[in-house]
Length: 243
View 1 (cartoon, rainbow, N blue to C red):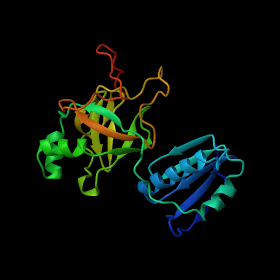
View 2: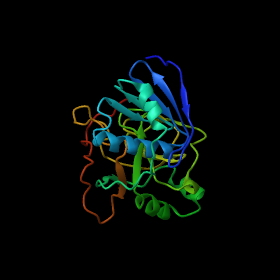
View 3: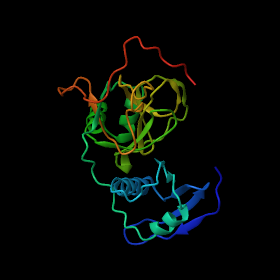
């Protein structure tokens, strides 16, 4: 697909500044200042789509600073319409959270504790006590970028990335928490691991986590009900080679 010009819309009441870029004949890329703005716009687009206001949209893909829409009969019409939208901040999702059992024994747990200025046990309590939200997916099939930690708890990537991060590793980088759906190189700060299957092409849907999904991490030794929606990997399932 090719881009055919660009348009800009200034921010109005209840809406951040945004830029729109036509993509091919039926696509529209919307650029926003922050990932929080993306979450708000994505939530509003989902609400309008559910109400039947966006009948032609075939695909809706949020990313770190953009939302891509495909299937539009007239992308320029929606681009112009966006200028008049009021976009409320994203609200707490009323869907039950996907609960992921986690062994909090990652090799970078002590370093994260030092960066946060607290003990490792306090890191576990704070991280597992947060309800996260999948902001967008990328990097690898099934990998979700989860937001929810306040800015003062954001941590940098490792100075020296690992050539192999085990499947199921739970890591932190910048504003995000993520779970590696397969073994791969990576530079995130690893604080734990889960046996949940993040990506299974035989499952429908194949990805356990989709944009907008609320997520909670459950320490495996906590006295809580078993997770409802995160199936575990078979004990002898072959691990994908590092890439």
